[in-house]
Image 1: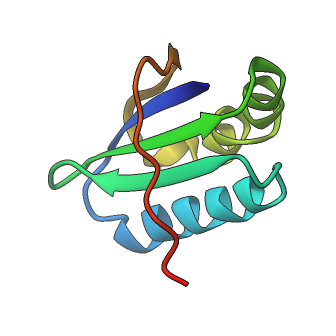
Image 2: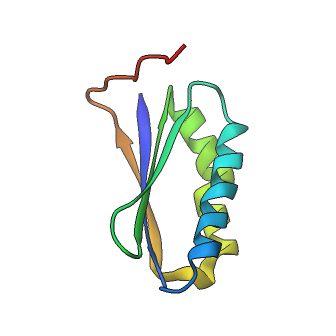
Length: 100
């Protein structure tokens, strides 16, 4: 398994657009293989992160080509500093149990 850890520092006062940014990101992820997992979180008042996991590097590269880095260009005016997208290798994990 591999992943991407993205960090975003937004300019204050654009909460609605920040929500729209992550909603559009979720839509992009939903078009990816079912093995892709994605989480977005707020770390502080204007600091956010997104973490995605993938079955393989090809799936990760496909999302990076269509996802956050591309979407960040559209929403560039929202960032206090440019976002980062770090490729990571998953060394251990525990998947959540299905709730069904």
